[in-house]
Picture (cartoon, chains in turn yellow, cyan):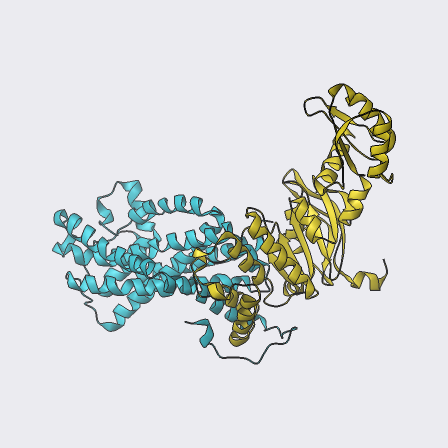
Amino acid sequence: MSRTAREQLAVSAHGLGKRFGRTVALDGLDLAVPAGTVYGLLGPNGAGKTTAVRLLATLTTPDAGSARVAGFDVAEQPEQVRRSIGFAGQHAAVDEGITGRENLVLVGRFHHLGAREARLRADALLERFGLAAAADRLVRGYSGGMRRRLDLIACLITQPPVLFLDEPTTGLDPRSRGEIWDAVRELTYGGSTVLLTTQYLDEADRLADTVMVLDHGRTIAEGPPGRLKAEIGTRVQVVVDDVTQLHVAATVLAAVTGGEPISDRDSRQVETLSLPGREVLLPALVRELDAAGVAARDVALRTPSLDDVFLALTAERQAA
Amino acid sequence: MSVSTLSPRPAAPADRSTPGPLRRTALDAATSATRVLLYYRHSPALLAVSLAVPVVMVVLFGYVFGSAMQVPGSGDYREFLMPGLFAMVAINGITPTMVGVARDVERGATDRLRSMPVSRFGVLLGSALADLVIGVAVLVPLVGVGLAVGWRMRNGLADALAAFALLVLFRFVMTWLGTFLGLAAGSEQMAGQLAVLTFPPAIVTNVFVPTGGMPGWLRVIADWNPASAVVAACRQLFGNPSAPASAWPLQHPVVATLLWSAVLLAVFAPLAARKYSTHGR
């Protein structure tokens, strides 16, 4: 990779590895996150997401490989890295016994801002993220969503170029998740680079420019969410009136999509994923079904969710 | 201290100048101390309980135990007891420190701090100093109640101040021990359980009774317990009744207290700082 290309990466990693005792938490992670983008690390519990973020945020040291954040080596220049990042861990790490404003001012002071400056920035952030009214209340009385938002904006007090958010919405109700999503989007308008981890595929789908799917400490897929979904094809479902027509419908579906349809007699439904790259159009499918004499009650084409992507990828790995 | 009363500085640029190591340690210690003290400011009840518990102990031990206690040399038991309670309060200071540190680890506050460009030693030093402020505050009502129940400082102001200085030093040492144990515990619940274990070392001392009547093996432990040296030093400096001592630390209690403090600090402050830096590695 050329020197300029490397400099434009906000986060990069090469062969990053970490083991805890006998457990391999991260097994040779390569990462390239361009500045100003949102990058999503996706995977189930134990996939290595948190370990990756902790390594990049200098909270842990790697056993293998190297990584650079905002141009600084995480092992050689941890201080410079810490000056360039905001980190929000899995729990909202806010102090409950003090007010929201005091939380933010303390974070500013720990970044060695002057008292006045820290306070001005705290006030501006509280205002911008809708916490001004609660600024002088003890955090103990905040809702889960408010705590999370406060935790998130605590990262912003120094306007760092790189933000690490570890499962920013885990445990929140849908409304609070929406609030956090809005907040994360707002961050990127300021030009920050965001690396977030999540177990929720819709979250990565909504927020991330690029997604990496991790499983057992290894990368199993990477790319824009749209491309990952295109790679596994379109989900096609047909519900028939007469259960005896299921196998006919399945034959038609196989011919049109190139997939391997699965029938379910109870729901009288046949379902498949189309072959990647094969275009499936609804009118054509309906015509074919009609020509075969299938009385279809419902025909649905659906872009696969990242859940489908994830299940397809992990199934492939298990089969392999 | 309010964070907004510190001297204002012109608006910092995005690439703010980084303070030198010493200044950074001092700045981070000040911020860290502010953080702990803000807690107390927002929970007057917590402070009230911290202040009230030692006072209750005077009544409990002074009058319940005292009613059946003979002090060597026909001294007054409550006067014998007060230096013991001063030291006991310092030992009990371990618990809130330990629980607070463990809570920070558990709730991610420690990770958040460690992801920032702070002096990690400064952060620990700051919370230790804040604990010390509370520790001194707790002594005030205890001294008042002590005076009310007949305890006196009989050797003059200089010796009394020396005794209080030793107590403050001991509290400072206990704070580092508490910090280390809190980091080792890693969770609030575990720290709460560990707190029970601070009870025996506080009791196997000369705090409540002279060590002379204990079985031989137990007496050795009590005589060489750092807390016993502190208590003996206070009894000596305050001119309060004390039992004849055979063990070296109790014969030279002031020197022994200073030595114990130096050793414990030299062990636990670096251990705590190391544990803090390498947590979760």
